[in-house]
Length: 628
Image 1 (cartoon, one colour):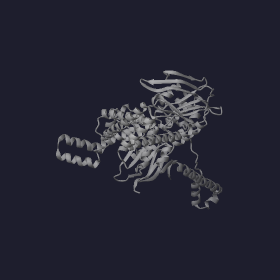
Image 2 (image 1 turned 45 degrees about the vertical axis):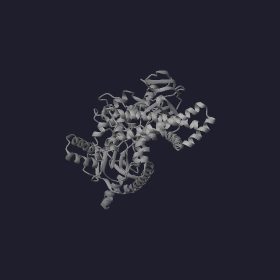
Image 3 (image 1 turned 180 degrees about the horizontal axis):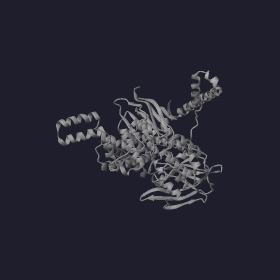
Image 4 (image 1 turned 120 degrees about the vertical axis):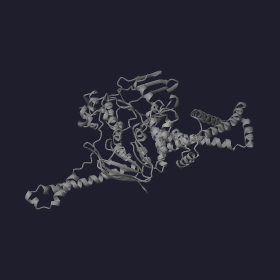
């Protein structure tokens, strides 16, 4: 395999903190690599050095293979807020955009020589289909309003636009920093399937363990400033990492045993030591360094008390809520039970955040009632993150809440000690909040929620910006949490580990209660979709294979058994279904042509959705009548 990237002896430090030192690695064509490390240990810094946005401290060398195309996806891509979605993507496709503009200018000037040159460039860049490719990719990522201004996009929509831009570059090598942040599960699964099938080479940082387990074939781990390589996916990495730690611990134990014997020698009288070989003295200090290595890692320690929870939690009775003409919640009734753990899933905009705000009392229902128990103490971890005033420090944030925090064993500790448990040592307490990293902000925000000792935790996208190690600890805490949980998350692994059942948000404000893990729900949905596809296929085959003689014979048989009204309905369906199929085919051809105006594109999209729904309804009725 060709070597796409060679990195030799790069280092990065911030002040006294060494992120990594003289690390080297090689990435070959076809490698799909995930980079794993705790927050603040250099993952994003390493990717920025590779992207040329930062530099190694002490030289080093970075060599990409000549002529390969590299695309970078940052956590936050800067867009021109005034451009429309289509124009922004179109203008950032580099050479393709320039080639199209040159062609348009040549046509405008009617210069035959320039036109011939521009046509050749269009052919070479495959630019003729650029507009259609952009529309198809944006549509696949559920971005339908091509004229929407970039500044009006939500966080999730902006992330999808950035992914579309990356995929449209047809790069040989993709470098991605947290690609699944702010994406709903449907889009994550689309990207996952795309990368599984793609022959591209990949290096990414992600906390989504299912995503990296299914996409990656190699894991890079940054540990104590050094890089370790593991062949295989995330599951295999966990096994091999444990083996490495076991071997390291055995070597450390061996070094400590040798050190004890050497200590006896090194502490002997000066007269005896002068007669010993100098190399043995030097070896002693090398041995001392090996023996003093600690495999222990400082991890976040979540150990806070949970307030007593009474029998009545939150009782919802026929709750309805609308935004204008849109129904976000329709006649929802439910009584939460003690220690219940519920996951909330559904498409972006389905009403999940509205539901959380209704549960907390931030919003009031239009009709129906929501009653809360007297002992209820809600901790609401919002997706927007922590609120702070300019100039506030880490210590200011927690001290404004309380001076002490109650632990699970009933003891109280100071907020300074609690900060230390959440990996904020004393030297960071006077650090301004506005200069914290994304992971540090999330950790601090989680602390401010938990130190109030809630008994009903509401977590809205808690996994964004948290590293895998912190997620493991948070999951362990939530599994044993002595209260109720309500979790909105696009992290499938996180949901599988923490919840007992799901509220599935559907269209028109309806909520389906599914008992089981998220993975089980997805399997159930795939089976449902497969069954619907099978029925549609059977109907289509029956309609297609029906000869005039067969139809006439069938009709005669049915007339003997169907009522007059039912026979009329069947005859009408057998006329309407082929007409609808013909109209559907015509619209599909128009949508694929790439020649429709934006207005006509929206009309055609809406009409084809209505036709598909009508065909499904009529086919089901045709099946019912045919089976009588």
